[in-house]
Image (tube, rainbow, N blue to C red; front, side):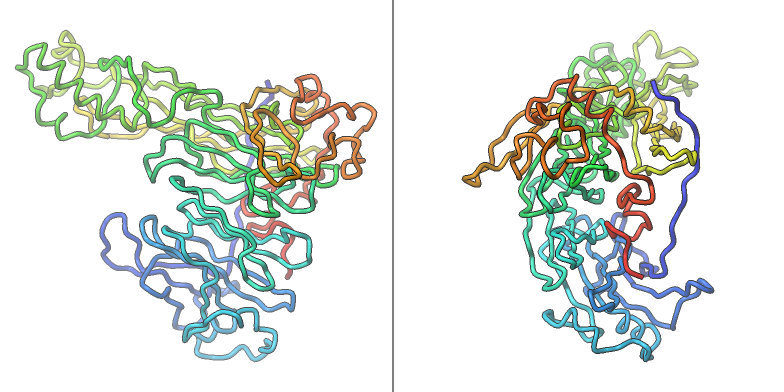
Length: 535
């Protein structure tokens, strides 16, 4: 397998920030949000005031700088909580500066600031660009020229599974999709999946409600109309974002996608039969603390413990079950290889065994023969959690490397089920994408491709596929002339086999790091712009 090395990663700064009011709030609530201006020179607030979010709702997204075609600067920010409605709002830098200082930025041309003229402004100059989300706007909006018309459009992600593309000129909706029963935590990943000129978007949908998800689906939406181009299901939720890489072929992006539980038949929160309650931990439960006593009969003791276990299994994995549904993978693919992606990395869940000193008089759900022993054996599952990572030329050798961060964590519990500590390890990996492409390790991905026919009806097909544009083969067509036509003309993305996928990856050329617009979280400068933002 590929050699892993350690490396370091950079952080970015921003001059506009959000804050919350310091007040006593109920657990799980969010205080009223504030938008502040911070001096890049001194780090001190600019002015004595701040912009407070209307309605007393919170603000959980980083503010995003939007620059219009005329050069006017606006700040975009989202509001809401996981249980209350949210909006995407905008305010010009002129109005925000005036709110903060009470003064006017005279060097700015006011005539340029008419971007919000079609919207109703409040007394401080704020406008709501997009509303209707039943829950918060959790991720920053994505700024992209989705249709290559020269205007930066705005992709809005609602936590409750809503995706909307706003026209950057008119601020009207180009399209919107709502995925009922799902939530979106991570930011979308822009890239070219099918062969048209529109940017497409990869998004992770988590089924259920925070923080009790029972599965996920990763989809790629057509930038032209929001229709689903491709999808794959996973057993566990994804909270981080993915990356996309430009290749030497026109309109062909390679996606670096995280997937949990590939080919697993078990969902992350479904019931799991056949467990051995003598070797697993269980959740905090009043029943576990109050009703299991040392003088119980064996039958009553077993019945009580089984009841405690059945409650615990609702949300937690067990050491004595197959943990394949928790395995996390990073896969690299494009529209030709979506059924045979390259496995860049895999991280499996681990069982952590430990011994506890049994406190005198503390009953516990272990075998009756162990109830009087001084030490009892416990086990916890350490579940992998991954972060977005980044791609760059770490070694300076002209070859792209993938930096990946994974945390394995699980609760350490007492003999009565109470959390007393946490087991956690962090793994930082560096993987050469050049080495991965030259000797690709391929896996089967049971994905679904939605192909648009001439009648406009979407037909669902299992396996890899071909997007809108219909050239029969992407290789050998005018939009991918940089690839070897002679070796590639017979490849059909709907039924590519392993040898064809191997050949494709070995010929695939990734653009250098300086030309990659989405090789780290929120773009090359962490500003949420797909391309380099204007100054």
